[in-house]
Length: 492
Ligand code: SAH
Image 1: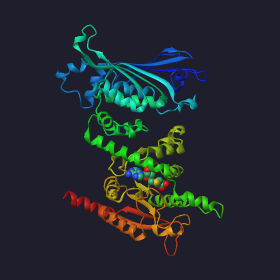
Image 2: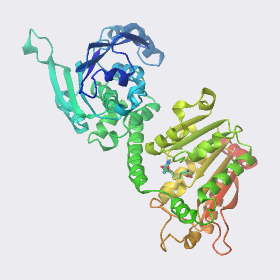
Image 3: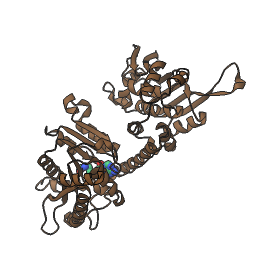
Image 4: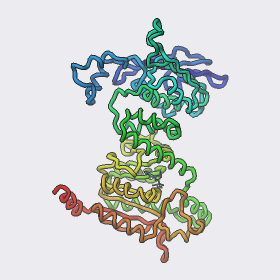
């Protein structure tokens, strides 16, 4: 399996910068062992004008079969000959994609400390894969790569050059050319689309493949016209995963559309009052109230659900009593900003072990969220359409079931006190609803009752005698007696 990436230079930028972008020196051939064999990186040509990096994957067919079987695939040993005698070792496929991500992981993320200014820039790029299995033929290859800004040449490879009457094989020689893409984008396209064209994964597809797909698809997959085919083939046509991915892509699209128009009304209020007496911004008061409640609860392992740009995660990290902190959000963009805020890439090992950011939607149960002491939903519920709220309720109180849950949401009654807020407007363009104190109390009480929690309501921010506080918080604590009784009733 073989793939080359070529770029050309300009007077300001020598082509050999490709070596910096790939984090692989053009003067050296390097080898990396992967689970299926050895990946070699070398440069067949490297001067200022033109530079080509080659990735050659040498597959160990025996390791391939062994590993496959270990994961519950591979069939009966006596029917195994076909597994040794097939095209896997020779054709570009999911194995090449995995090698690509292993060998060029920093480049795929667009990280380049040596040449940060070029990592984010489009480059003239030419990618060649001499033998690519392509189910759907050259026509599908075009439909997949062209919308992304590639000029595509996909020539069918004849079954046997000496006998053209035998027709074409299922392979093509692929050449992609573009001047509009960054190297990181190009690598992410290949990482997803090579296995999609092969349409036969070498490993069992599990639910974390959805995360990998969404990560690699960031910035292009949500808008791709063949999104459905790509998603379904990438996930080996596992219907439930495909549906999950499609729904998450839709949410990412919505969240990113919203993100650009949002900035919390708190910011506007802060800017307005900053010149006067500089009161503590509401967002800060809310964070303090949440931290106090978490400390009171004795929680050590905490989920921040709908963590946004990571301000609370950052505050939690500063207090060592919180030993494990997980931020989850549906918006990749918010998570990217959170990662930058936390300086995840420069964090020491001990600190890094305490924190994780996950992409996911609260409208689905998620096994990754089980087993924590506490969960925070700070200004999140009002971002869901009301009919989706029961799904969030189940995912948090029914499935994840942390001992403590903190929920904050605006008190709509207080809106008349915001000078900058026109009458009848929500505080934030993306709020699907805002509740009165009575409405929030009714919801919180019903949730607590349904799932075996006790709930107490607390004001956050200056409490107005007439309209109450600007933010309302509900603190749920699992009622172990009720919870046990429910469990017994279920098993009886
Ligand atoms: N908790 C943060 C951010 C609140 S803004 C704070 O208090 O400042 C609401 C956040 O919820 C956004 O980042 C949005 O992307 C996220 N969100 C909205 N719907 C979601 C869903 N279904 N699943 C997970 N996160 C969601």
